[in-house]
Image (cartoon, rainbow, N blue to C red):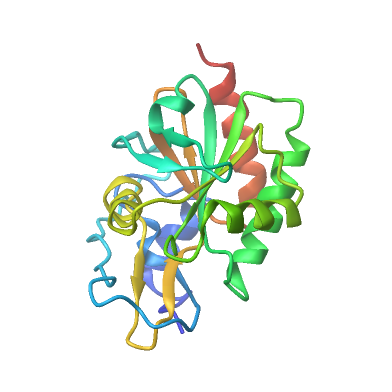
Amino acid sequence: MAARLMRSSPLARVADGLTGVATVGLCASLLGAGCGDREPRADARRDAPSVVVSVEPRAELSLDLPGFELVDQSGQKRSKADFAGKVWIADFIFTTCPSICPRLTEKMSALSKRTADAPDLRFVSFTVDPETDTPEALTAFGAKYGADPARWSFLTGEPKHVEDVVLKGFKQVLSRDSGGMIFHSERFVLVDKRGKVRGFYETEPHHLDALEKRARELLAEP
């Protein structure tokens, strides 16, 4: 089972005070989901980034996201540059996940449908099991949740590069234990038109409301 913050801990109280938005240093590596039973690669495990917590609830994250070169569900190459000028929401899933990922994807699907009036708001799901998740597997997975490929990309690629994107780019947890269980972030990540990470959001309804509101605000910015 993935380690979680005790709700009575000082760190948890800080997280509560941020109303679901992680400010500088409050990485989603604090909260990981564990799922899967496949044997890990020998080099698959990576330690999560160190955590520094900001106690300023009104501060907003503005984190440079490094470039990436991956492949989407149609087999087309996709990079950070393809999303320039768009506001987008990212999450981290894998298609054989039995529990957390279906729930995350259902919530992403609902968010995409209720923002259908905002075509420049995009959605990007990064697989954390690229060895299994081929473009074909991602296409079938997306179709199961009614994903519109014009707005919602599912990305896969070379495993080491995917790990670097998740860990070093988005500062999210990604590891496997000795039994093959995959630990990954349960949060949604908001990225602005300039490719900067602007916040990490939990997926309770009021946090998703805050995410939608902030995404619409960023869309209105030049």
